[in-house]
Length: 196
Image (cartoon, rainbow, N blue to C red; front, side, top):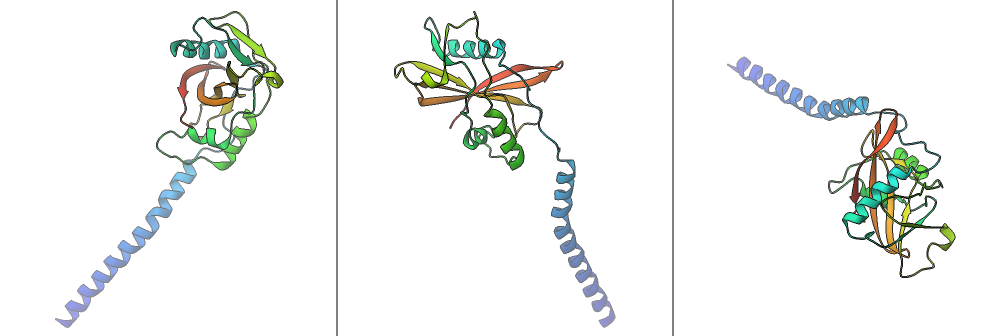
């Protein structure tokens, strides 16, 4: 009888020990699996020398849908501007906070700071192109500024551009123009107003 009790006790201890080891090893295994399957390398983004007119015209259509660019000229800075920050990049995570690779977020921020010319021509909006140095002189004029394209550190395979629409740089509303790779190029996916 004593031998049976000792045997049962030994089995209970072995079961508890096995369960403890399993619970300790499970998070490590899941982490290793997640880390092993995590993509590495730089995230893709357009390597443009200038911003295509199609991207600007698509944003114009969004402004028209909001009643902003209807029948009035809109002032736009003629080159991309360093309007992105870690806060704007963080807004791409959406309402459910997600973690991004800090190095990829830093690389995205660096890419967004480049100065590229905008391709402006006849289109759905009447743009008034201004130099960055004169952008904030008209205090009563709507102003559009765009960032250079950058990779979205929260969505693999997605890039985009930040746009800030403001009244002479004050009370800005940020937008994210999603750019998706298609047939060796990039197309606009959707335009989203960001809560910053």
